[in-house]
Length: 125
Image 1 (cartoon, rainbow, N blue to C red):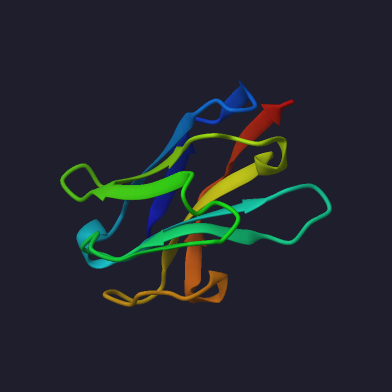
Image 2 (cartoon, one colour):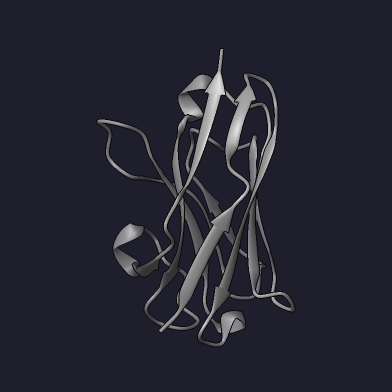
């Protein structure tokens, strides 16, 4: 059973940057893709970024493309989400997630079965 712990959220002004960190334990991290998702109050959960198990492939939602970067360090069992040029509409709880199957490149949240507790990101205008 994988355990995911996020950190790095907080309050930032519009235009600022934050880096979220997710550390995984409980299974072989380097064989699983990882994802970052977010959910704002009253809205559906949406994908922020997904990275393949090797780190060679990434996917971003159009709303964050060019501003967010997902990366991973398989030696540290850690995945990151670097968020630049933040906007008030980026305000949400951000969740780290892992898929159920190894080596799979997920295409959406339905492929993910393990979730962290979430970290709040608030962007003020």
